[in-house]
Image (cartoon, rainbow, N blue to C red):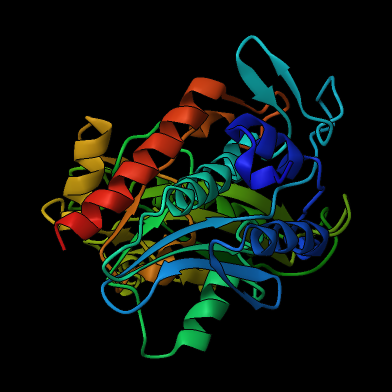
Length: 360
């Protein structure tokens, strides 16, 4: 039996068996491409290891996107994470929640519609892309946007675990490094500037900053010190110290404004440098049709999400983040997906696709 005509849970388990870590998605993509072509029901394009599966042609163009890569297995897991199994109405394994469940539901919805003979008055595509988890230069959705150039979808759905709630705002990620300098010398003799004390002053200043405004769906900017280091040996005055800040941003407050506030509030002896700012905050007006349709098919009100996704590469397109699975289970040692959520995801995506073209 072809994977794509089997049950959603059977398809998901087949996908989970591939240890498709970021940059190692090729075996999974090869197998999926072969299965898709075997159906003879859909149009398949491959760009590197990014698959774009379509039905129909012309405008409007609705894009559904999820990713094929997963994070490495957790050392705390008590089962082999790439050997999926069923228990208590759930599929267990790495990637079941983030985000092979979403990819499974999208593919099943599209293939089921094609099997039924349904054809859109336009084009519907499912893009399964690589390297979402690494946030690096190999990101598949970013690559596709480069290939498509000025051509862009009219609306999009990003498949991430949202408990099948329509997400209309997503925080961005700004990573900043703070550096301080001190005087070198023997710890018993030097009484001058101490890089670690200076870093402590900077940390205290950061803790006192409150950013305004806030977003109604995702709240305000969140600043979290994550890693720090200073000094070289135990008996030498520390010459340098540094700290990284993980800053979760909102659409209402540009990165430039956040950096300006930090520079104004931090001690003069603190140097600020941007380590990463490519994941900007994104939002879609809840009145956009794609959001209203996701709300209609799910029966749930729009919400916000603190986690980043490939939505950032679709920020110029009306987009909703929407998929089966609970985000709190992503990357966990007992990652799993409820079969009921998976089946509901298939039904919701199928209905959303149909409704989109009925009301286009």
